[in-house]
Image 1: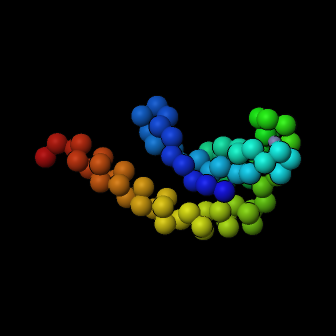
Image 2: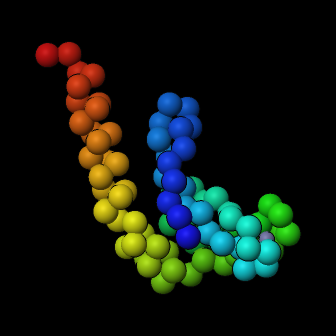
Length: 84
Ligand SMILES: [Zn+2]
């Protein structure tokens, strides 16, 4: 399981890469979708991966420091854009 950031419409969005239980491929799930704990489908083998709330909290817990750091960097960057 990994965390990665993708640029979508000029915004950096966090994605979790989950391992498919069917074929082992990585399934990319946007962080905000994780909160809904809806099942995700593997693009390779169509295996449905169910996410429990427990799994969600485990994952976010594990990457909380990284997510916070990114959020902090983003906040600093946007403050710089405000004219004095
Ligand atoms: Zn699969």
